[in-house]
Image 1 (tube, rainbow, N blue to C red):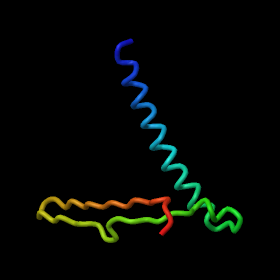
Image 2 (image 1 turned 120 degrees about the vertical axis):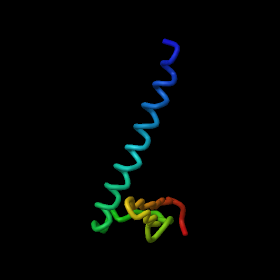
Image 3 (image 1 turned 45 degrees about the vertical axis):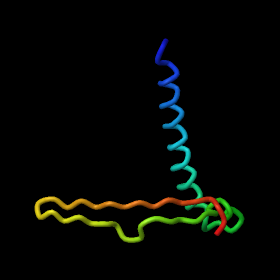
Amino acid sequence: MKNFGNKNFWILLLLLLSGIVLGGFIGSLASSVPFLSWLNFGQSFGLNDPLVLDLGVLIITFGLSIKSLLPA
C-alpha cells in the first residue's frame, strides 16, 4: 500500500489527458451546430508546418499544436 498514492496520480493524469482530448473532439464536432458552437471556443498556437529532419536513411518529423481556452 506504499505506492498506492503514486498509482492514483498516474490514473488521474491519464483521465485528465483523455478528458482533454475527448472534450476537444466533441468541441470540434459541435462547431457546426449553431447553438453548440461555444463548445469550440479557444485559440490554437504552435508550429504551423512540422519541422522535418532528413538524415538520409531516417526522416524525423516534429510538430506541436496547443489549443488555448483563453480569449484572443
